[in-house]
Amino acid sequence: MKEYILLMFSAALVNNVILGRFLGLCPTMGVTTRLDAAVGMGMATTFVMTVAAIAGWTANTFLLTPFDLGYLRTITFILIIASTVQFTELVVKKVSPSLFQLLGIYLPLITTNCAVLGIALLLVDAKMSILTSVLFAIGSAMGFSLVLVMFAGLRERLAVMDVPRLFAGPPIAFIVVSLLALAFMGFSGMGAS
Image (cartoon, rainbow, N blue to C red; front, side):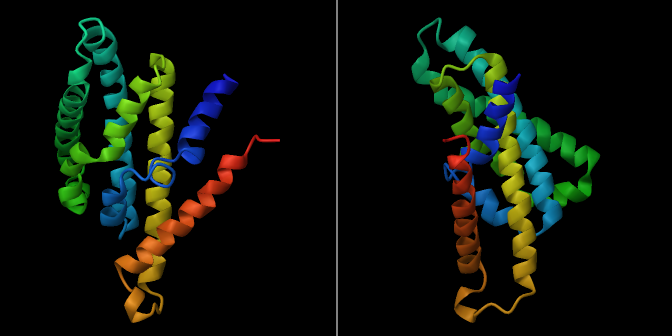
């Protein structure tokens, strides 16, 4: 049990998708101008990443590997992710039309979110079991959501601060996300003695 908790903790903080692997920067910069949009995107990405990990592992284990179709792995995962995103988009539109409007173009862009595809490919390359794959995907998604929410809170505060004109907008956002990445690097030393 302890190893599973450490796996999720490691995926969320030590090997954070955004700040450690630099995947998913597009939605990080695009959706984090408002906290509620960041929370919604985090929840949608968590769902898509978890389902894509399960479906990708299953497809790879029972279809691609036995029939020696490894060269179709990327396209298979993209199709799995795209269909999962379509389902998520329909559910969000039905359940919360305001969140659907708030997320705008970024919800369908989860299909091209390199973090989702990156985690699916990483799980297959690491030859994880289904349980560790799901836990790693959930941990990675929680880390993704955590960074989105933290960054959105920081950007909301930056919006009301007096920032020099040359740094206003995206430049200060990149500076803040790089400082967050430096802060998250401190987690990499945990457990080392």
